[in-house]
Amino acid sequence: MNRRRPGFVSALGLALVVLLVIWLVGNFVNSPSEFVNVLFIGLNYGAVYGLVALGYTIIYGILQLINFAHGDVFALSGLVSWTLLVSWLGITEDSAMLVTVAGILITLVVAMAFFAAVNAGIEFVAYRRLRSAPRLAALITAVGVSFIVQNVALAIYDVDFRSATGLIPRTDIFVAGGVSYQWNKLFVLLVTVPVLILLTWFVRATRQGKAMRATAQDRDAAAMMGINVNRTISISFALAGALAASAGLLYLLSFNMRYDTGFELGLIAFTAAVLGGIGNLTGALLGAFTIGLIQAFNEGLTWYTPGSDWTRSIVFGILIAILVFRPEGLLGERTPEGA
Amino acid sequence: MSAAQTNGGGGVILRLEDVHTYYGAIHALKGISLDVREGEIVTLIGANGAGKSTTLRSINGLNHPRRGRIVFQGRDITNEPPHEVVKMGISQSPEGRKLFPRMTVRENLEMGAFQRRDRANFKEDVDRVYSLFPRLAERRNQNAGTMSGGEQQMCAIGRALMARPKLLLLDEPSMGLAPIFVEKIFEIVREINEQGTPILLVEQNALMALDAAERGYVMETGRIALADDAHALRQNEQVRKAYLGET
Ligand SMILES: Nc1ncnc2c1ncn2[C@@H]1O[C@H](COP(=O)(O)OP(=O)(O)OP(=O)(O)O)[C@@H](O)[C@H]1O
Ligand SMILES: [Mg+2]
Image (cartoon, rainbow over all chains, first blue to last red; front, side, top):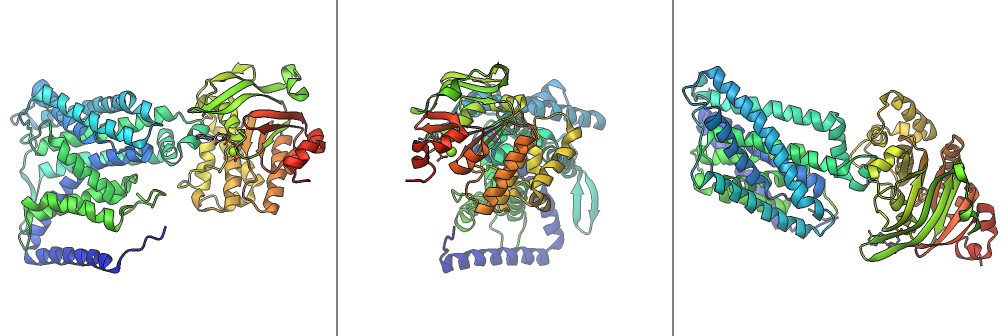
């Protein structure tokens, strides 16, 4: 597959990258402490995007399906976490620290388990029958499921925003030379990192994880090895649902959410998955942190910075740029379809 | 149909009775009946598109027949899903190898033993595969997708052996290989069989397949056209003309 790129297009791509580097270095020189503070924010965006992007990439890897419903599952999971944490467990800003942390952990575990089941259910009801149908049929179905999930969220939670942003204190852990780091930021990483370690262990080392990788690489061959393909696909959806729920809770603790929060965030996470090379788990994280950092830099830096009004244009500009310059993504392999 | 009709009783390990299999509306198998007995190599030969691979896909549960019956060791497996069929002891080296390209040779072999719970014998079995195919031992940490065609074929056969099958299905194990590799593969097929595993061998290379096998079936457009001792088929005028390249 030798696709020829016109010289001026790759020159343009290179120019963009050079501009980006100059802009970052300029900002760093201009105000190193601001740069580092913003970088911390970007890591948190990246963590949430990454947890959602992994869901897109796992499902694409195993079914070659872009599961448009995934962003909406994420949003619904955040709202359900709100119900668990705020309505049922009654955690407020005044709760004792230990109670708050315990409440959040219980919510995390329950929400992850519940949305693992929900996502596996979605596959069973909506996608399983379409497995050998044309791709377009499954894709349209995914769009349909996206609307259904979003409207379930609307029906239950109405158009109001829910928030639990005050539960983790925003007090500083350390301040040094204008650089500061807060508990609420650390908390996001304290959840994300163990979840990612568990996921890596599951995919690399367990029997089911190996079955997942094998099924993603060749479904028929996997079946011939004695792998229960249906069960493996169910487990993949469950895994994606659990990851989305962990992201939903983290998002809820940082931002307001409502029924349609998943639309945009889902698209951003999908972009991250494509940027990293869809189907590739490490790639999804790389893409997510790249986009998270770009967003934070764009919204937080001050030296020649477009500002938050431009965030969406930039993120989706990146999507278009990848599709033009490197359709297989940063870590992806060229597939026969060239996607 | 003399050989196919022989009722071997206890000796028959696999029996297909009037199997009809479809791809959507395409009627690919139009009533296949065949037997595989304990300890033997049976070959299935025929032109491209005759339905040889489809016969194997019917046996291993990837394409369930719409009519007919498949019985393995006295159990009806006609509608069992593939992973159950493997569990019962039928494993396959498929057409086109179908290795897991981004897994190493060793991981591919490991996947071959996926449905087995006795991890204890795993090492022993890997060593057996390595001794059959020393080349695989050298390549154990290489990604399967990056190996040569012949090496991949060895890996596919080795992977099928890792299941400790009671019946081994081989789909064109010599496809695309240099003559020297073909000889080698057939030698190993015989060796595996001598160690006690019955084999259903699908081959384009009819001459070598009939040499290796005890019995053979000749397929033509979804039907069994001939069934006989391999030796008799080699002498058969029709077979010689159509499949052995003689005029
Ligand atoms: N996935 C499929 N969809 C539709 N038709 C198929 C499919 N696979 C095979 N067929 C058709 O079924 C018939 C039997 O195919 P099969 O692959 O079993 O032949 P074969 O004997 O293995 O041939 P070859 O020697 O070329 O491997 C052919 O006519 C083929 O076109
Ligand atoms: Mg074939």
